[in-house]
Amino acid sequence: MGMKRMVAVLVAAVTAVAMVGVLVATHWSHAVPPSVAAQGGYAVHNGQVLPGVRGKRVQVVDAQGVVDVMNQLVGEMNQRIEVLQSEIDTLAQRQEVLIQANADVSEVSAAPGGHAGNQQQQQQQPHAQHMEPHHQQQQHEQQRRDAGQQQAPQAPPQQHQKSLNMDVSALRQRAAAMNRAQTIQNPAICKQHLLNNNDDLVVFVVMAHNRLNYFEALLQSMRAVRYIEDAVLVVSQDMFSSEQDALLDSIDFMCVIRVFYPGSLQLNPDQFPGTDPNDCPRDISKEEALRIGCNNARNPDQYHHYREAQFTVIKHHWWWKLNFVFDHMPVLKNHNGLKVLLEEDHYLAPDTIHMLLKTWRVAQEQKHTSDIIVLGDYDAGHGAFAGNVVHRQPWVSTKHNMGMALSRQLFDKIKQCARMFCEFDDYNWDWSLFAVSARGCIDQMAIHALVMAGQRIQHLGVCGVHSAGKDCSGTDAIERAKRFNAANAAQMFPQSLQVVTKTGQAPFVRAGYGGWGDPRDVNLCLSFAGIDTGDSNTNLF
Image (cartoon, rainbow, N blue to C red; front, side, top):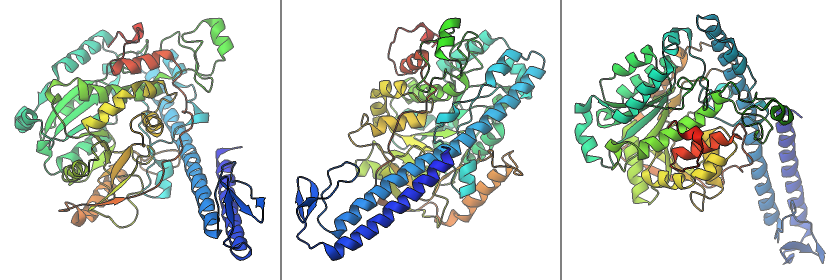
C-alpha cells in the first residue's frame, strides 16, 4: 500500500471513528441513565461490561466520557496522519536531492580529474522506504510539499574543481589549523562583549556547504538585524572554495570565527567518514556483503541497507559543530547565553536579536532555561503576524528545527544523552534528537520550546520535485522573504511579550529511518561527545 493510500485510509478511519463516537454518544445520552457504573476500570451498563477502547482499560460513566475518549482517538490518529504525510513530502524531497547529486557528479566526471567510480557510488538510491519527516516549509500547502531539507552534501559544482583537485592532506592541515587558531575576524567590533561573555551575547552558528547564493542572502539579512554588532557569528564549513572564502572575508559588520568540520567529504574523499572504496554498496544483501568481504558487512541498518556517506555526514557535522562550539572554543568558554543554530538557506528578520533576548529573559524568569527557543515554525507564516506572542509547547522536530537557540543548561542535558542520540538508527540529527527527547532522556517530560508566533526566520530552499516552472536560483524566495519582513515591520520590536501555553502531546516516535547501522558512524558520533570507543576510525579527529 502506497503512502498516499495509507493516509487516505487513515483519514477515512478518523472520520468513521468520529461518526461512531457521535452516534454512540447520542445513543447513550438518551438510552443510558446517569447511574452507569464503572467497575474495574471498564464501563458497565445493566450488568454488562462494555468493551474497552483499543484494548485499554477505559472508564466511561456518561455520554461526555464517550465523547472524550473518541476525541482522544481522533487526536492520536491525526498525529499518525501528520507523520505519514511528512514521510510522503520527504520522499519527494530526497528524490530531488538525489537527482541534483547525480547531476553534479556527472559534471565532475566529465571535467578533467573526474572519477567515474565516484559517480557510480553517488547514483545509488537513498533510503527511499524510510525517509525522514524533515524541514517542511509551510507558508502554504504547495510550499510545504516543495520544502528542501538540509541539503545532502554533493560533489561540488564545476567552479569548485580547482579546490577539489588540491592536495587533500594540505586541505586537512588547513582545517586543523583553522580549528586550533579560531581566529576572530573584525575583533574590534565585539571585543568587549567577548570579554564579558554575559547572557546578552548572542552567538549565531551557521552550517555552511556550497549554496553561496542562499548564504549571501542570509548574511545580507543578518547585516540588517539591529544589534548585530553585539553578536558573534561562528561559521562551520564542510567545503573549501575560493568563492566561499571571498564571501566570508567580505563580512565587515560583526565578529566572525570560522571552523571546519574535519570529517567532511572533501577532506575524506576515499576513506571513512567519506566513502571507502571497499564500503558495501547500499543495496547489496548481507549474504553477498559477507561473501565479498566489504566493510561493515555484518552491520546493515534496520532496513537491510548499508551507509551512504553523503547522508550520514549531515548528522555528524551537526553533532560535531554543537559539541565544538559549546566545549572546544576557549573564547566562548564562559558564555552562558544563547547559541542560535542556522543553516545557509535561512533568512532573518530585523528584530531577531531583540526577540531572542526578550524571550531568553522570559525563560530565565519562568525557569524555562532548558527550553529550546525557536525563531518560528513552518506554520507561522499563516494568518496575522503576532509580533509579541511566544508559544510554549512540546518541541516537535518536524515543526521546530528552524532557528533553534540552545542554552548551556540544555546542551549539557543533551550531551548526557549522547549514547542514545548516536545509537539511534537514523541519519537525521533532528529526528534523532526528537527520539531522545520523547524517550525522556533529557527530561522526564519531552523538551519544550518557546516558539515565536510571529516568524523571525524563513527558509529559502524551497525548490523540490513540485517546482516545475519555478525559479530555483533562490531569487523568488529571497524577494518573498524581504516582502514578508517589510509587511510585518510595524509588529516587530515589541516592548513586552505574551507567553501562551499550548497543551498537547508531541507525535509518537517509532523506529528511526535508518542509514545509521554502521558501528563506525556510531563510534565517530560518540567520539565528538568525548566518549572513547577504542575505534581507530575516530583517531582522525
